Image (tube, rainbow, N blue to C red; front, side, top):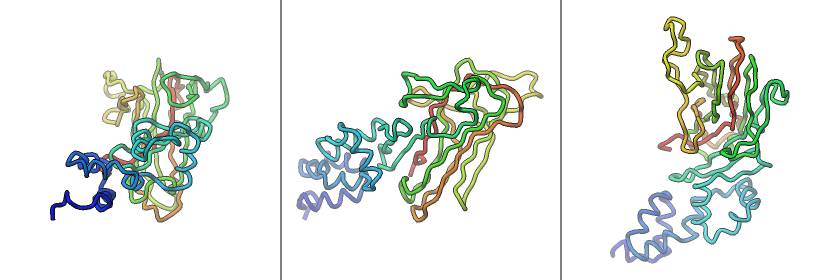
Length: 270
């Protein structure tokens, strides 16, 4: 008996144990495979089923009225969905269907963040969120965020990314910034990076404090991002992931950083 001759329901059951990418590829085999691969039975297995996911969907009429579960998956993997009063976004990894979140600047703890002398809250058309935090002038840079592991996909290696822009920035070019990611009662990592994307040489070289440090890269949406650290979510424990950005030792004044947020997404290959 040829595999293609199996009942459509049986094929759908097999496809539901693959990945979204595999299901799309196998839909090209035949009309029967296409019908099975496009079925709600298959795409339901690629979508989360937790209460938070249902709540996010219910807040968006466009998503709630998606014509099929595949259409819902594609919508969630192509564009972030804003929720929690504009403080967070949710998206699915296009290839794996695993959950991705971004904590907006408003969802983070920013020291002096509500003091206009140091930070301003502004609107940028290129941001997914209603507001971003614009750094006016600080010598004490401290940003902290937190996410609970149950909202993430289990058995997944995640990484946290600082997402920002630099516009006429000062104070970052030759100043290391400390990034850290830690799980309560578990793994923690800390590293020094340079948030200034410029690779222009610093002279004299003996005064270069950031040589060899990791620098940000440009994202597809035009923002800069830099990896803060990794962690593994087993899905077995309810833990807090703490993320921080610190530059509090140099004493120099810094400005021109526009903070969109911190994104938590699966590492590539997961």
